[in-house]
Image (cartoon, rainbow, N blue to C red; front, side, top):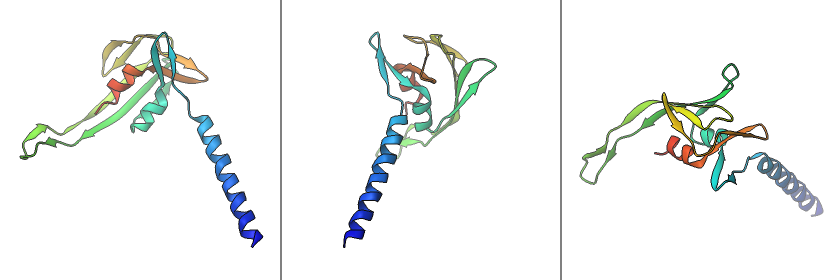
Length: 131
């Protein structure tokens, strides 16, 4: 009877250890000058976007293929047509200007490198990944 209990405790200990190791790798947002800064890669990958480091241009590039189904009202009339396209965004560490689909967007704070990760203002991520 003791072997199953010991085995269960070992398995649970390993699970808790793996979970805590995973949780410690998740970058956390922070607030600077009243602006919430979000980890760009985490936000992008959570929304199905591809993140690329452009070493030549020292920038982070986001690419997302957008496929949104049509939205219909209760009578079957189209409220919003289906959409398909590509989102492309470019962020340069230390710059408060990002290029989103070729349009320059001024951010409230510059993109910041912190612990090897790029953080951008939450307002930008909410615009990038809004449905």
